[in-house]
Image (cartoon, rainbow over all chains, first blue to last red; front, top):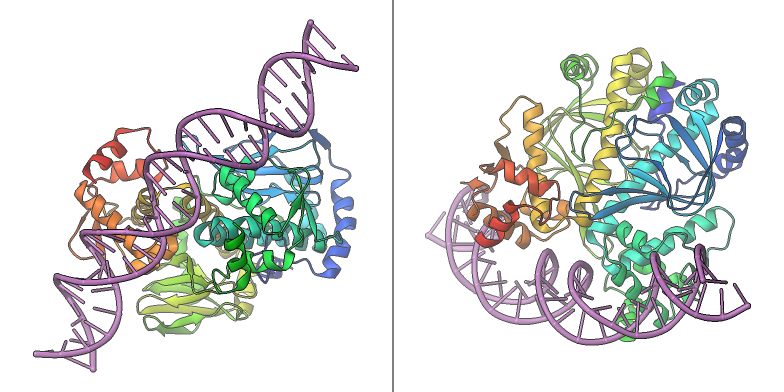
Length: 251
Length: 251
DNA sequence: CGGCCGCTTGACTATTATCAAAGATGGTGG
DNA sequence: CCACCATCTTTGATAATAGTCAAGCGGCCG
């Protein structure tokens, strides 16, 4: 039981952010979360409020019920790096005893909390929950690796395409439409997540819009009208294909 | 035992690549490795040879005895991303059932192998080994997070400083001198690791040399003559201090 | 000895950051 | 209820960092 728990770590096929929960695991998920988190304390965190700070000792593990969180870190000179986001259904606070990043609500966010002790108990008592926990840790690892690729080699265009595809994939896995995504975070968060500036983010959105890849009425709702081409961009197919060609022409 | 194993994950204080093995853990380490890896098959991998490829199913877990490995991934258009390196004492192959990256020897590398089954057994039988495994996974996670920061926000100068400091810290933890580092990998590997080009790496080395931060006789041996200033650069203290000032003047 | 590979350096280009300012949007107080 | 203010987003002009293209140097191995 123990042996398999640590080593039986499933890795996503691609540099995708979401855990590739198999269908069965996905089915189990809501029951599991309810079983273990419902009896924990519930918490409501207003937008821009901090759940924990870098250096804090972890006291609770949370399940995001609604809203969204950002994980970020401040460099000494004020530059900020956003490591990732958490959305409803995600379990956050696993992986380290001392938090390595700040966690902030980017919207009004509802969380269910479990104490560390309760997590320990649940892990030993419930193999399915143990798998869930391990899947979350594994997911975090492959997500981080994927993100390294995105920020170290992709162009601004490719990074934003990747970001949108990431959210689209998440929607699809959740049974929602993959052809539109909600952006609960501000442009600054996206910029700091992708290693770019808000101006570049904004300009790239405009480029995408003019190229017919997306449509936006409000900044926080994006319709992926050219999902196929976005996918090509997101995977880093550089200059090999025509989609980029047409994009350059349109830009 | 099981409960603590997954959640009792120690995280490095900083965005450093090496696990912050406490003194006691470090002391245990050699015994542990010998106990569990000595009876496994030993393997000698020539430079530039591949240990595993992306997509391969994991069959073995290895302990690096000598030499060095690189973990990398190829983008569709030929761009390469180096995710990290492994040096003697590192345990590699944990964390996912299907390898997410290629593993290549960058030197003649000696490895001791354990089958997955043996790892499972050892984890359940030996709590200390379980801690070691969990420390490696935890280390990989925080290492990946730290690397995201490096490649997403730091300048070329800061990235290379960070890289050198990383290796210096490793030396110090191992009881070796922190004031010089060996670079077993080629410039191309460093470039792909830091998200830069070989030309930029080379130029930055030259800048460091002219600024008195380092000294080099051969490309693979670097004396960190200005370790203090390198540390400041590595932490991303941007333009706040004088070290960068003097560096700009010297460049 | 010669060719190959890796490192360094130079000239130029290009992508993205920076600086600046003008619309939107949303919330608050008069 | 409307006006004002703050905040966020978009757009424009310019600058800087790193990339690209190209060539020369040096060591190592056949």
